[in-house]
Length: 374
Ligand SMILES: NC(=O)c1ccc[n+]([C@@H]2O[C@H](COP(=O)([O-])OP(=O)(O)OC[C@H]3O[C@@H](n4cnc5c(N)ncnc54)[C@H](O)[C@@H]3O)[C@@H](O)[C@H]2O)c1
Image (cartoon, rainbow, N blue to C red):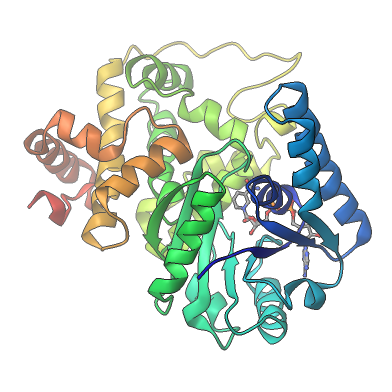
């Protein structure tokens, strides 16, 4: 099915980004929000992006005019969706509110229209129950900032049809995104596999095995990550990380339990760079780095890598995603220097099995050997 007209619901950070990449790539878009002032703010964000593109020589004046001519905005949701081929919802992350909006879209959109959600953590299957067209409901999980981030996770619900999946992938490709497929499940691919990096790092710090600086340093210099877990956590926001981990803990159990240090920092409002303090301090007040514990950086990288590889293998074991999509997702969505399966093959399955067997004996079920390793 050809998608020529999209309605984007929500003109916030993500909605305006999705509207921008759609209009930029030839799709007609109507962006919807609840108040004119929110729409104005969303349109202003898009105009700024367009102006930056012009300044950098990436967008010509006539391309900018073309882009803006394909873009409309309104507070009339029903009017915006009534002739749409696809609706992409990007409103607040709240199941009740999203379901209400899904029901409204379902009532007003034409029968062929696909309804997608940009949710980061909510169940696509539950969202689909708010409509009479669960076969046409799908997740389209973009990453922030939408214009710069290449990845689109296409999240497939139990009832999502093949035709809907193909249409979502085609729209993603038209928007110049690299698409990966994941079955509807907590955290999809990227958030689920990223979480053990942060959690393991915090646990090692909490237990006094290594300092934050030693762990960050090991992950950047040895494992070649662009940022260490503590720096990344502060940048993303410890509140965001804590919420994501708590959702996975609720849905998947103890192996995602947020460490106490993280909960305490969030409680104290030390939520990262936006609060000028998180794991580290920012601005004028710089804390002295802790005395190094002297732990070997190769050991640290290995210790953090094993649960990450394990989680990636569990996703394959459970039929949630395939190896190739997981590798692409982690490289493009979380800036992993190599995909988990590339790393697994480099280290060797036998060695990874031995390492996990040791950790399993020492630390328990969260390190058990997945079926994938036989
Ligand atoms: N921010 C991120 O990094 C990120 C990344 C991936 C996915 N997401 C997901 O994208 C969604 C939106 O996140 P955001 O960061 O853009 O939020 P945001 O707060 O910037 O924007 C949400 C917008 O939705 C509007 N809105 C709320 N209810 C509405 C309704 N009934 N009808 C129309 N508009 C309505 C709000 O007025 C607001 O402008 C969430 O589901 C979030 O989990 C966010």
